Length: 285
Image (cartoon, rainbow, N blue to C red; front, side, top):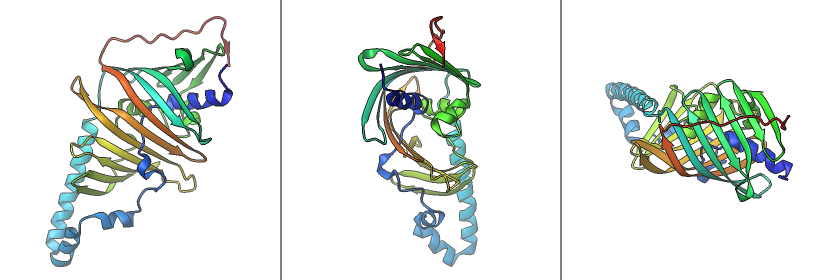
């Protein structure tokens, strides 16, 4: 029988699984507005001192560039009718122990997310079916089931998750990116922008090809001290989709959890089924 602590951990990340985080800057916190301002090129500062008219033009151009960049990110999200994947999940808990399991995901856009999680020896431990308004879970080792509203995602993850956010995480799209973008920086490594929304500050870094590289989320409410880092890597092109097959995740509020995701197989727009039935001998939890 699986230990209760292991069950809770796997259950939690069966919902959050699903995107990745850069450990390299984990715990550094989002750079303050003052620091990001100083990161903007010295050339801009020189213009400010010498040519007020040029500053106004630069400001207009910057706003136009930020708007175009935001629109590009939004219009180039991965969009598909269906998605399926097999992935290996490795994580280190706050207890310092390593855990690893295989997960299978099937997605029907805006309607269903189906997750199957295998424990040791390939035995299926959980099966989950998520819709925009419900979460259904089969605990197959214990022969019990659970029926909850979609708000259960927030209870498990301690994040303002809904179906749409989870769908974006699975597909590798940006999350919590607000149009309120205060700063940007462009260099030979890529482009970084800072957006502030009602819940999170998102310090987002893009590769030179404008694919997602890293997202650093900090809670606007500093009293919560909640953050989440997501890194996207090892991109592959399949079915005209530029897909991140490797992700890292670090999440912390009261405790920290580090997760690595490796997508071994994946496909888009294939006919899928979503088998989920509750056996008669299962008890409701």
